[in-house]
Image 1 (tube, helix red, strand yellow):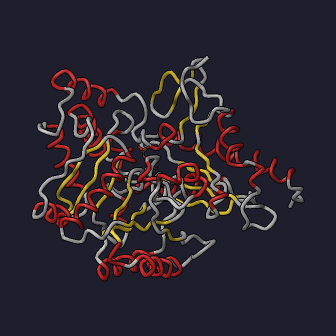
Image 2: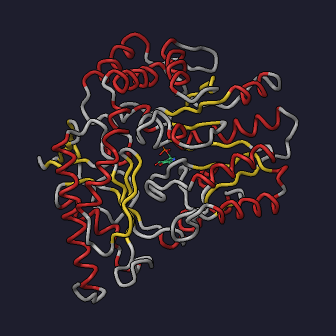
Image 3: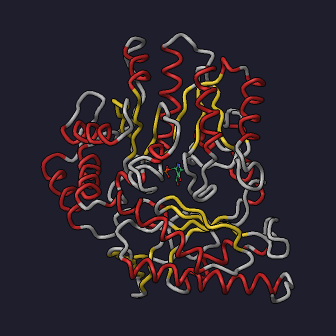
Length: 444
Ligand SMILES: Cc1ncc(COP(=O)(O)O)c(C=O)c1O
């Protein structure tokens, strides 16, 4: 009997009692290989890091908490400095929060503050790709164009324009997304647009997908022409996941604000942040000179000390370079292991953020029939085989079908990566055979 109100009431939740590296163990002593960095891509450095725990403990013993409304602390000050040193040129200020959705909300508020302080208070709308996930709060939920997620909460959600993703299915060149962006700007009135908001490389919503360079260049031009800001949700990609400290460092566009979270605490503390370029700060500095909204745990010494310890490990052990160098081979290993499986359409990858996209094996392009529940079956079979994965089936939103995210900890050893790939390929083959049988696909 549990008193927890879970996310899915029909799901049986295994009780995980400990973790070491990329292994977690349940209450019955069964061990699972964690190919998903703690399930959410947060635990980028694996479980059970004594050095990070020691840093947290040392800080807690000295000073665990003060509120940054009236006080600051050395851990917050140093972490802000460390982040700006690793961010693209021109990012000079950091505002801390306690998680991903909070960071995205703070970015929406900072963008709005920027425009209001510059005397453009008509700018509030945010344009974003429809197939996205930016968090479960009302403001962040409004930034996704997915009826499947929004429906029950619609009365609370402001209406923002969305554009379709430029995937192979809808727009392989990126031009249609630019046309859709132009239409959205025109329909809303470009002078009402506060920001374009997106992940530079998608995580759960469209695993490891990024639009073509043409889209980014066109977006940059439109920002210059129309005066909106570009905000990158780097909740997943920030802090090394794609082989760069920030995924923007691999793209031909520099945003005005970057929101980060998961990899900053690496699963050891709830912490997020918004990094701001100087001109956004300047607008506030020469305008209202204050920002009254904040959370109780923003910039707290304990969580900032964890952030500092995480950066220290990433830097001294060279994990960001490692992910950049090893990532393409991991993607290739997965693609090779999944070769010949007709429902596997594409294996995409950026660093240790890898996505596998499934299609109907009968024609090689359509979404799989939703009643097969292929994504759910992949995760269930993976779990039976001792592997933690994350698959999704946002089919009813219209832009993506069944897909799996594969995002191991940066610290996974060679043999652990090989074992994850082998187990995963076994899972996909088993489920693909079940799908073929259900759909009466003739053996090739
Ligand atoms: C891309 C992206 N943005 C925002 C969030 C929300 O972060 P949090 O769950 O920390 O609020 C998530 C969480 O999965 C995410 O993947």
